[in-house]
Length: 404
Image (tube, rainbow, N blue to C red; front, side):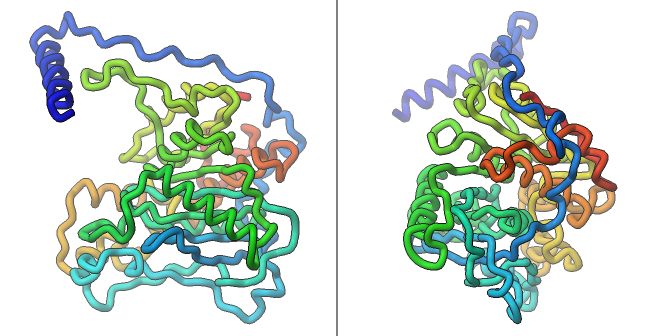
C-alpha cells in the first residue's frame, strides 16, 4: 500500500513538472457538467409570506439544554423548546472557553483568563409539551467545540427544533496541544452516536416522545458544513441540509484533474442551502458559488456582506472580545500560534470592516430557521424565503438567489 501511494505521488509530481515545462501542452480538463436548474418545487417568491423576515428574532419558546454522553470522554449538547413555567426564577446557562481546551493548553494561559459566554438556555428544565419536534444536527468547524454556535442552536430551539451538537474531537479545539479524550472516530460514526443518543432521549426521560428521529437535518459550519454535505450523500434519513461557510471545489487541478460532484449534490431529490460571508478569507466565495451551481436539487445561496468566516455563524468573535478574542486569550499566556490557526480563529471578527455579531446573527438565523422550518414541515409553505426578504434586514443586506 505504501509503494502504491508513493507511486501515485510521483506520477502527480511528474505531471506537474511536465506542465511547468510545457504549459501550452497542459490544458486542464473541463470541469464536470453543471446540472440544470431544478423545477417543480414551490416557488418561495410566490408564497403568501414570501418577504417576511419572520425568524430574525427569537421564537415563542423558552430554551432548555441538557448534556448527554455518547461514549467515555465524548459528549453532545442538546437544546430543546422549554416550558415558560419551568424557567421561572432560573438563570440561563453560561459557558467558559477553558472547559473546551486541553490541559496542556490550559496551563499555558494566564490564570485569570476565562471569559464567560452567556446563552439563553436553561439547564435541565421541563420541555414544552407538544408533538415530536424535528431533529437538527449541528456540526462544529475545525478547532471548534460543541458549544461554539450557541446563538444559533438556541435560536433554532426557540422556534421548535431539538438541536444536538456532538464533540467532533478529531478536528476540535480540545485536540490543540492535547491528547485524545475518546477513541478516534470518523465524522459519520460520531453522527450516528448523536442520532442514537437522540433516539434514547426520545424513548425515556423528560424528552420522551418529543423528538422526531425519523429524519435528520444536518447543518454545519466550515468543516462541519462540508461534513453535512457528506452526510447528505450517505444517509437516507437526510433529505435536506445547510452548509455555512463551506463550499465545494470542482475546478480541475494537476493534483485532482477529474474532480467528482459529491453524491448529495448530485441527488435531485435532496435540497440544500449554502450560506456564507462575502468577506470569508478561509472558504472563499467562488467555492461556495460553485457548490450552489452544482447542486442538482432545490437550492439556495445566501451571501452576507461584512461577514467573514466566523462572525455570523458562531459565538467566537464575541467571546472575550474585550480581551482580544480567542487569539488574545491564547497570547495572554505567551503562546505563539501558527499563522493559519490565527487566521481561522479571527476571520470575520475585526469590526470594521466586518459587522459585529449583533448585526450579523439575525440575518443568518432567519435564513437557517426559515429553511429548516419549511423543509421539516413546521411551515407548510416557505416563509421569508422570497428574494424580497433581503430588504427586511439592516444594516446587513444579503445577496440571495434560489432555484426551485
